[in-house]
Image (cartoon, rainbow, N blue to C red):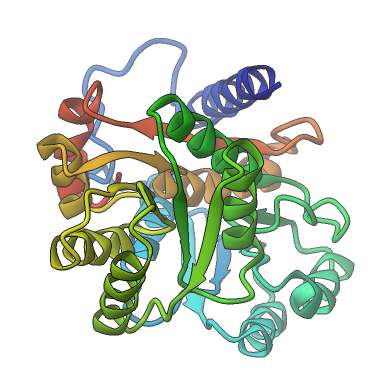
Length: 332
């Protein structure tokens, strides 16, 4: 079942990527010189006069969102679009930012649906106002219900199932899944997916913005429960805290993570993190902006009513050498 769903994921991502680069190409043939992803020296493009708003639930200090913003800004620069990026981790605050974007008469809106029910009225207002709206990163189960045209992100349940399946293949005995943001539907879905394919999984809630507290909680848990063979972090900074906890607790547990940063990528190369499930946030930001541009300038509707999946993409020692240099650019 998982393999069939994964085939759909790869097909959807490939189709979406082809459409994006077809839209970005200035001619029918290959370009002689193509800037690298995230290259801030990409050729300047004449302004289209379009303004897009990107509203996320980014928490202060969470560097994961730098990749999404880098992707969005790279697309905006190449397409001649002005991008207004704003964020608030509070659902009410995010809704206010959406309303502010509506009031400023933006030409397109890209929004995360972390607290779907709370932000739905604001999203509906944008749609009713005739503003092309796409969802990304969170909202896999609700984007169509709320009227968004497209969705770019990962099927978090599938991603979790992929992790649980692999832990089983590695001979795991008991897994601890670390939720760093209580109430996040996406994080809960990840851990539920792990448990679906590896039933001996227990969740632990920590405060992701308090890494010393997270490390202490994980150390205590590992000392208390010596049957734990795998820790699953739902973000790279949590994985790094988990590595310190494993050392402090003198545990033999293996670390697995979702998402990447440069330190986590290096840990994969060094063998201290077994693998990462990457949702490719740079792609989410890039494609969200590009899809709005294609819709506004050419009437395109990417995905054909299906989500365009950017993950799960497995990163381990078999492919980390290729990926590691891009983590330094904060694009992977």
